[in-house]
Each structure stands twice: as C-alpha cells, then as structure tokens.
Image (cartoon, rainbow over all chains, first blue to last red; front, side, top):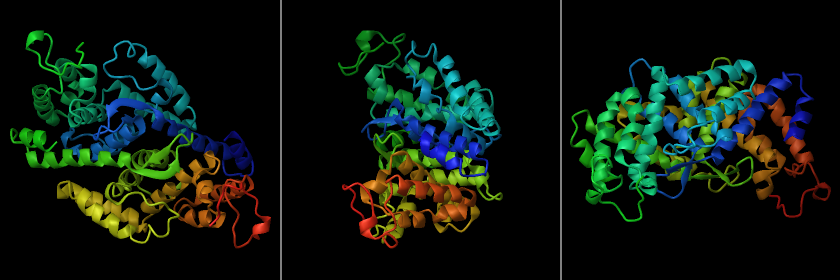
Length: 228
Length: 228
C-alpha cells in the first residue's frame, strides 16, 4: 500500500499529499467492517459489524426523522451516525452491559479519534472530529436523536431474535429500561412503543423481569439463562 | 415479528399503521447485510456485503466531496449512496463483469424497488424511490458523482488486495478502463489517478494487459489466471 501510493503521488502535481491522506483514510476505515458488535442480525445468522450497523442507523434516521424534535438537521444526524463508531477501529466495540470494559472506554476512544480523524487534512478531519465529539457529548438535539436511534436499532434486533443478546447475557428489564433512556430524550414519540415492547419482551421470556421487584421464585425463563 | 407488531400497534392511537410500516422497512433492510459482493475487504479476509459497502461509499462522498463538480448536493449524494443497493435484497448483487447476469438486472431491480420502497408510507417511500431512480438514470451531477464513488471504492479494494477480483476472474485492463468511465464523468479530478493506478496494476501483475493490443506470447501473469 505504502509503495504504490508513494510511487503514484510523486508523479502528480495536484496536491498529492492531500489526496494521499484522503485515500489513506478511505482505506483505513474499511477496518470498521471487521469490528463485531454483540447484536445479532435479525435472522440471527451472525453478529453485526459496526460498519453495517452505522449504515442501518443512517437509513433509520431518514425513515424515522418525523419522530425527532422538529429542529434537527437530518443531514448532520446522518453524517454523525456514519462516523459515530469509527473510533472502534482502534478502541474496539464495548458491550453496553460490560461495566468493567466501559470504565476506560472514553480514554481509548479519544486516542482513536486523534489517530483516525488525524489521517485526514485538518480542514476535513477537524469538522468530522467535532461532529463525533458532538455525538459523544449528546447535548444537541441532533446528537440526542442519533443516540436514540443507536439504542433503538439493537433493541429491535433483540426483539426480532427472541431476546438475542438479552437472553444470552441474562439481562433484566430494568437494565434495558435504563439503557433505552436516550430514546425518551432524543425521540420521545418512540418511547411509548419502547416501554410496551419491553413489557411484551418480559411476557414472552425474551427479557428477565426486574430482580428488585420480582422474587426469584416467581421468575420464569429458560434454564440456560444466567441472570446477573 | 408479525405477532408482536400487530399486538403492539393495536394498543396505540399514534398513527399505528404508519409506524408499523416504518419499523417493518427498518427490519427488512437488515437483509442487505447478507448480500455479498465480489469485492474483498482490504485485508482480503472475506467478501464485502452491500450494506457495509454502502456505508463506505457514504463516508467516501464526505471525504472526497471536493473532487465532485462544485454543484453537487452532498447530503443528497449521501442519501443516494445509502439506498443505492437496497434492491439487491431481492435482486441480488450482480457481478460487474458477468455479462449474462446483467441482461435482466434492470427488470429484477425494478420489481425489488416496487416491493421495498412500497413498504414505507408513500410520502416517505416515493421520494426515496425517486432518489434511487435518479441514481440508476445517472443523469444528474449528484448521481454521476455517486456512480464515480461506486466504481472507485472496489477499484481501490482490488489494488489493496493485489488484484483481488481482477486476478480471480482474469480481468483485462481494457475492461477495467471501461468500467471506470463513470469516474471520468462524475469525479473528473480523480481520473488521472485511476489511469495511473491501472497502468501500475498491469505492471504489478494485478491486472491483465489489453488482449487486443498485446499478443498472448508477450503477456506475463501468474499461470493460475484465466484471461477472458
């Protein structure tokens, strides 16, 4: 890679270094296709990778935009969703319910952002880095809608796969309710559906009841499940 | 899926049918992650699927926008690239150099577009269908830039994988030059690099020389390659 790119751009006088940086970024981000998430595809055939997940969220933003606050900038939300997981190329994907791995997640992702957005010329890399920082801060309506979709998509996949990672890891409904709070904030019109689906998921045995409110003797779920 | 969705939406009075259609579309498009292209990932570990390919192109549009004609609408190009391959969920991915499979491609893809965009409420589905038709027609600058990226990305992957699908299928450089013409039209500033890389690919043995200009006795390529 180094060779052909160096050979190539030495022959051109059209800002070779700039284009080389852009092509290097384009080739580098291909690695996100190899970063696996815990979430299963809806046919349960395999785990989802973070690149195809990002594509799914971007199209969800377009299909579900009407459930966002009226003031969102949809094209900015789409860009934010396309790049929101790029840092996982270096930092890896951290399972939402893995408390230990989430402790140093922020540091690992900041270092990854330095390297990855730093591959681009600053006039391109800095605005994209700022868009990612905006997503991470989750303070703007655009970022809050993006977060809502980032929680709603794996939620739908877990329902579609009869509990998916919830059953695999023995997740209780109180933790899913907590995990889904960004939907309440960023796409409030979707919250009633989320609550209703969580109740149906518990009734269907896809999700464990809240351990604080349900005595273990009253719980019903397959033996293979191991609640927290 | 049918059951929980029907149960759920019968309990709500917030345009249940509309939201049900949108969620059905969101779940249906997950299938694009299972449609494999001929192109390999840049680490040659596996074939790329059409969902992650679409994500890659959308971010390429953002990183390489300056090489497009000044008049493009970048957010429209990004939307176009996100949905340009959705029809492959029904029609499958047709290898660029498979002449026979390309003969009825258009019919198969029109039927797929009818079904897939038809899953959405018309006020959402019709504009997305129109955006896909615009891509297919390749007459606007937005569509032509999108096509240029759709050709440039697998081109970079083939170079990065020492010939990738070119070597696998014994493709000659004249066919790649023809295949890459949309770059000349949609992103003319990238054309000199494409031409130079094709020459380097032939010199490196990643791509076969033009059979019409090179006598077989003069060709040099690994024995395992089978030219057309």
